[in-house]
Length: 115
Image (cartoon, rainbow, N blue to C red; front, side, top):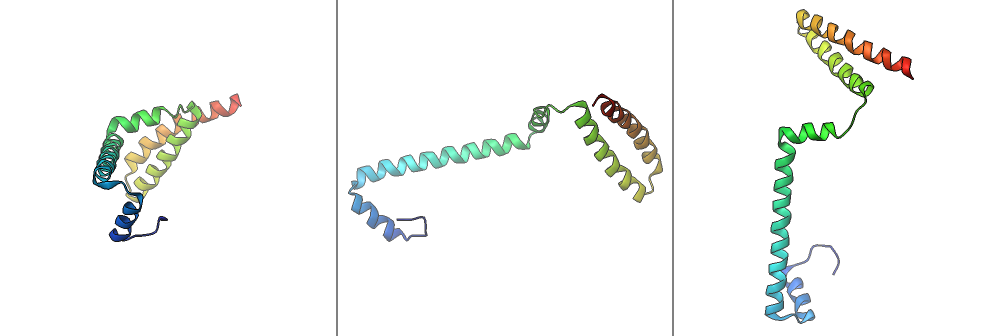
C-alpha cells in the first residue's frame, strides 16, 4: 500500500493479509496511540516553551552576536522607529532616537576602523 488515501476496508483487508489476529492488532493499536499521545504532548510542550518570554531571550543569546552585529540590529530598529515617529509627528521621540542613533553610529564606526 502506498501513501495515498485508503479506505477502512482496504486497511482491514491488508491487516487480514498479515494475519496478526486480534491480540496483535490490539498491541499495534496501543503502540500507535501511545506514540501519537507522546508526539502530541511533545508538540504542546514545544509550543508552550516557544511562547514563553524566556525562550525568546535564550534563543537570542545563543546567536552570540558581535558588538557590530548588535549595533546593526539596533540601527535597523531605530530607523524603523524614526520613520514611524516622523509620520506621527512625534518629534520628541525622534530626538531621543537621534541621540541613541549617534551612540550606535559610534560603535559602528569603531568597528569599521578595526577591520
